[in-house]
Length: 270
Image 1: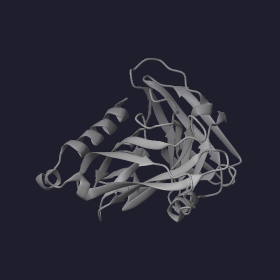
Image 2 (image 1 turned 90 degrees about the vertical axis):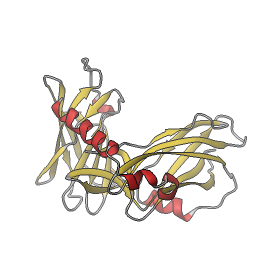
Image 3 (image 1 turned 120 degrees about the vertical axis):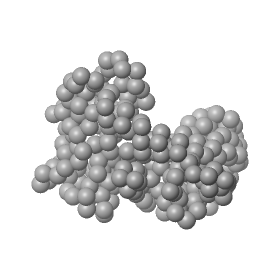
């Protein structure tokens, strides 16, 4: 629980202590949002993307932002004929931010999105907002609106194709032979230790553990390697402090390395 409070304090301090120049600078001058069209696929889904372009020196965050930062939140609620939206995340970078490690993107990021219409064959319009944090010497919150009618006949978009090529490898693609999770009760929740049998991803590898349940919080993982096994240890607590169950199949472990990243879904009992 102490680690949770320290991380929350880091986030609050990062976003609350803004200098006068940062307040004076408009968010519109720092980050711009565009919707890219990728056309209608044979399975009836649309391929599109959110493109975020940032001024030099600024960055924004990945879905799991690390020690400090806030993850983007998407609101598709005002869209027309949209049944489901799935965001495909390119592999992020790791930044050292005032002694804390944050995870995100610099200068520009294209986030591919797969849109399933409620009614096949009918027009689809994306309308909504993205809430995100953008950082340089200080961090500021931003809310960006979008309103875009998708083009079913749009050709293949090179920017979307490049972003899809930058996604993390699957466990199979990365040669992961086994992933086991060891769970142990603590005073505040659970400790989880993940053992991943996989080749090195390059450099100082970093594992990120996501619980798959928004009511749970996971501390930044301590990551070490012992030969062919990567070991990631973290603490899991409930936001409301109540007892909880952790489903191993819901865990998502992302390994970030210098050569590539790996997206691992679920783990077996250790």
